[in-house]
Structure formats: structure tokens, C-alpha cells
Length: 454
Image (tube, helix red, strand yellow):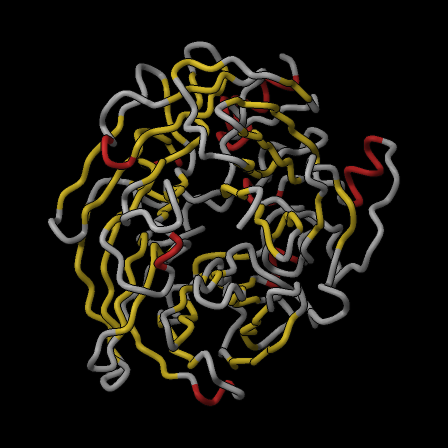
């Protein structure tokens, strides 16, 4: 039996389209079916774990692989190029015989950045949570340097900063296993941290994401916590596990806060949240947050998010009572919620997501009309499933759903990938364009449309 066969038979997070690709490709003038909207000028970027060497399939955790970034550059109705590149952490450098990436390191990590890729302050960043620093990439996706934002970032960063559409600043909530607090971080439009506030928490929780409103940042303090026994075992895996006795709560911290003592906590039943869709203030002081809720995390399956299908909920936080009212918006399995990011922190009507069932099984794309309470489904065809969809407005002043839903789509019948562009107002209809890629893009985590001009 070959190594590959062993891996496939023992770890779902290394088999099929979860498995890594090893070749870095540059391809120009990609074939297109349909027509790419000519107003799209920029890069559709995506990142995920892609182990540079074969890990132990019995203990490999999906979240820990070396980062690989993928990108398609669009301009004037053409798909000019596709590129994929390793994010060169210390392990990648040693394994492939490449130069060590310059820049600072934080904690005990090797510089892996594998969870999100964004544009900010005129630069491209691969980012990760739990101790890793941002990694600056070139426009063509080569690794440039590891960064602490010019010495202004005091420690860990996050995979999910939220850009305030009115100020252009990034708001983030960071965590690290040594910290007995969550750290609220604000990164200015110049790419330098202008503010940090430490918010004490009783344990060391895994806090994957955050949300903001016009006035507050939401901090998710949930029952997946650091486990010293796992960390000290010598096994290279993620040292966090389900801790049902820890409690489950969301903190509301004013964006203007200067002390963690200003946080107000709202409690709910044990569950786990990776990704909020969006949040906004209500006039009476309550806060609405739409999010994807998992029943639990890393309890039965310690190597990936496989504890029952997650679903879309609306949580209404009442800081006066310290409580959260939960309302199910859509019960089908789904993840990777996105919306029109011109409305970050403001009331939204539409949300998008990817079907995501038990076993991290990917599927169709979803569009939710939260005003009408309806959901449209886009089926990509037999054997074809979407990765995280990204909404791009057609123009700066376009209506909330007047724009494009773009995603990488995997075709199991051909073991290949495309980028598919839908019009959001004809979501279930035929794609506007399908861009054919020279290799498959593995299931990973997140990405963004980074326009060539703001």
C-alpha cells in the first residue's frame, strides 16, 4: 500500500480535494466560458492549508498545514493569470531549500499563515490566528516578509479582521495560548496598530473571528479552550478541544474602549461559532449578530470541524439582561458566511454562504434574503461544489445585491477547479463566466476580492 493510499484511508482531511497540491504554477490568458464583467479589475485570492511534506494522517489537523495562496487576476474582461504559491514559513523554507523569510517571529511558531488573505494599506497579507504574525506577499503572491506592522503589533494577530467601511481601519480580536485575555486590535489605514485593549477571560479560548457594529466589537468567548496535555504530548496537532464546562458568551466592547473593564457579557448555551455573517446595533441598545452556529467543536473529531452540520442563526444580544436570544434563520448545513462588506457593522438584508454538511462536505452556494426569510440555491452541476463565495458590488454606489458572487469551484468528475462568477440578482441562473484553472484548488478556508484600486 502506498503512502497516499494510507493517507486517504485514515484521514478525510488529506483525501480528495482536501489533499494538498505540490506544484506551484503560473498560467496566463486563462480559458473562459461566458463573459467576465469588464468592470472587474483585481485579484480573487484564496488560501488554505497545504502540507509541504506528508504528515501523520492519524494526527494531522486540517487547520495546521503550511499555507498556500491561490490567485486569479482579472482585467478588461480577461483572466490574465492564475498563480499558486507556498507562504514560505520556516518549515517550507527548510523542506524546499528556500531562503528563510525575513522579519520577526512571535512565540514558538514557525511562521505558518494559512487561513485568510487580504489587501490592506496597499499590500497583500496572508494571516492566521493563535500566535502567528501577518506575512506580506507581493502582488504576484510571492512571500516577502513576516511582519508585526512595523513593530506596532504586540503579539498575535487574527485571521478575521473587520474593515470599517467608513474609516478603512481594521478591527481584530487576537488570542494566544499564553494569554489570559483576548486582545482587541485596531490597525490604521497606514498599516500600523494604533490601539490595543486586553479583555481578561477565565480560560484560554480559541476565538476564530469577531464582529463589529458602528459602536462595538463583539468578542466570542466559547467552550473550545487550550489543552496543555495535548500541547505537551509531542504530537503535532491543534492543542484545543471542546470544554463544555467552560461556558459560552459574547462580549460587547465599545470601539472607543480604553480598558477591558468596559466589556459587557451576554451568555448563552454551549456551542461554537467560527464565523459571524455581520452585526449591527438596535436603537434600544441591543445588538443583532447573524452567524453560523456549530453544536460543538473538537469533541468527537479532534482533527477538524465535524461535530454535526452548522446552521445559520440570528442572535440578539441584550447587555442589560446579559442574555442572548437565538432564532434559527436557515437550518441547512452551511459555513463561510459573507455579505456586502460596504455594510460591515450596519444592517444588512442579504447574506451568502456555502453548503457544508457533516464531515465538512461541501456543496451548493446559498443566498439568503433575511428580510423575506427566503434562500436561493445555486447548484454548479454534478460533482461540482463551491468553496467560500465572495460578493463584489458592481459599482461603488450599487444596490446591496447588485453585484457578483465569485467563488472557486471544485469538480470531482474531472479533479479540476474553476472560478465561477454569478450575478447576485440572478443567483440560481447560469453563470456569467466560468474561468478554467490549470489545476485544482484544494478545500481551504478563506479569500477575498482585492481590487486594483479601492
